[in-house]
Every structure is written in C-alpha cells, then in structure tokens.
Image 1: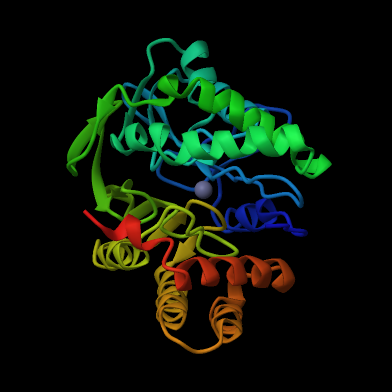
Image 2: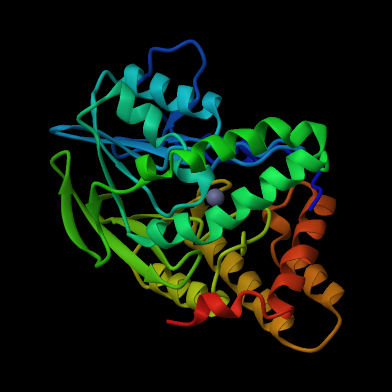
Length: 325
Ligand SMILES: [Zn+2]
C-alpha cells in the first residue's frame, strides 16, 4: 500500500486547541498538550511515506505519572519524555491499548529511562509475536533483500525489525485480560477489554472522573486500521464505548472527539463494514466512507486509497480468522 499526503498530527493538535492546559509545561517544543483532568495528549504523526505513531497520553495521579501507548518513532518517544519532564513526575506505568508497533515500540526506551515502570496490557501480544509480527518480519526481510521497499520506508521497516527482534521486551508486566476497576499511580480508572476487535484483545480506558474514553485504535483517522481486526467485534466494542457514559473520546489516531463526532465516525464505520461484507462494488464502500467521515478527513485521496485497501481486505475474507475464538 502506497500512501501519500497529510500529517495527522495537525488533526491531533487541532483537537487540543479548545482545551487549555491544566499545568503549563516547561519545554522548548510543546508536543504534550493538556486536555484537562491531569491528562496530556502527545499527538501521533502520520507523515507521507512513513508509518504512523499512535496518539500517546500522559496522565498523573498522587503517586506519579503513567503513559498510555508509547509510539513507534524515536521522535515520538522523545516527545513523551519531554512531556514527562515538563510535568516533573516519574512514570510508574505504561498502559498499552494493543500490540501494534505504533503503540508499543517506545516501551523499551521508557523502561530503560525509568526502570520502575510496569507495562499493563493484554496477553494478545504473545500470539502476535509468534504469528502476525513474525510473519511480517519475515516478509520485510525478504522485501529489503530484494530491494522492493521504497527508499522513504526503509528506515521504518528496519526500525520495526529491530523492535520485533526485541519483542519480549514489549510484553506486559501486568496482564490485563479481564477488564475491571484499577488504581494506577493512585488514580482510579476502569480498564475495559474488547475481545476480537482491532486485535485479539484490546484495552481501552474509561476515566469516569473526566467522563473520557481513551480507546486506542477503536477509533482511527483517516480510516479504520483493519489489518488484524475482526470488523464485527470492533463494532461491538464501539457500542460499549458509546454506552460507557463518556462525553469525550480520545482515539488512537486523530483528534479528540465529542460524542456526536464519535457517533458519526461509528456509523460511517458500521456502513463501511456492511458495504464491504456485501456484494456491491467496493468503490461504493470507499465513497461511503469518504462521505460519512468527511468531517474528519484532510486528504480524501489518501483516505480513499486506504479505504480501497481495507475494503478489499474485508471482502477477501482474510480478516475472518480474527473473528474466530
Ligand atoms: Zn495505531
């Protein structure tokens, strides 16, 4: 899949403008933006020709800070570190919403910098390390050897190979395969587990005090990233988010959403899945996505080529294995 165009970070930052920082950060470049409720957003990027970083968040409580998702590229991890030092708190934990490399690759660097850190995540990464990630490493090595990786992507592909080689270091210290109320850094949170959604098991967070759902890749821009997904399980997880009592949704990629915006994204998602599961022309599915998600898109051409790709992935039945228990 060749992608060319916008930087989602612009969208992510736009989501911050309406939310004044709770605490000013002392740092030269303001990557981490306060979004209220002792929470900072480090917007993930998605530059043309490169692999994305997921959004990260820094939250703090009476006993320290913690990070939700650790990005992929060094510059994203650096932005998290700068955010942490701006707050002046030592992180005690990382929560990984899911094992995709744009959300977990920063774990080893953060653990090295802060040896006390404990990673909270589901155990789904274990199967991924011997399955999807092992297979994708093998095809990446082959593509590099054959010179078929576009020049702009070589560094990303090599970086991902290094990360996968250290896969054991990405695994959770605290396995959260069942949802439940928890206190992290002295801050109460509800961790929710979605089965067979973006991955075999995803975590999302409901912060009841802020009426905020932090949902990882259950919401992504410019299209749903369906690579390892069960589309129907994902829809069920979106229903659970809608019913959570949240007034705000922080996606894995893209800007913070109001519930009205989340509802629009969710119904565009449902329509896209139904269309791709049907028998009509796949172009109508992509066109439906572009129109349903119009409010969230900066570059229709990029969104269209990605929607075409994921529509075909659903239609081909290649995702059906992810729906089986
Ligand atoms: Zn992601």
